[in-house]
Length: 127
Image 1 (cartoon, rainbow, N blue to C red):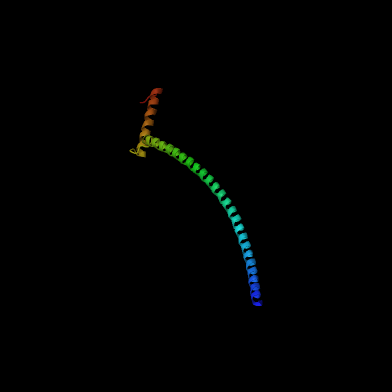
Image 2: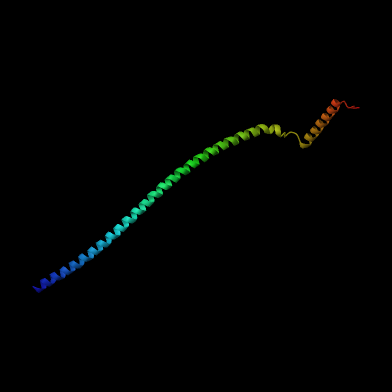
């Protein structure tokens, strides 16, 4: 009789120890789970707000890029028009076929001719 009762007492004490270990382990695991879920919820909210901010910033940057592209296109059109006008004016401003000395000589002749015309108009004696 004593052997069976003693064995049952040992089994009961083993079971009580196992039950208390299991409850403590379960409580610890539940606490870890709760902490993990709380941290995950906070992290998810933070990342959701970050996504919203980055999406809004991306839209702003895309709008700014569109405006800058339009400005660039307008400026390029103005530059093209100015260059076309410059090309149109260049032949009348720069005569590449005549040297500097030839232009100076021609101007000198023109000035002398104009001075002679002025003397004639003033009635000065040319002889």
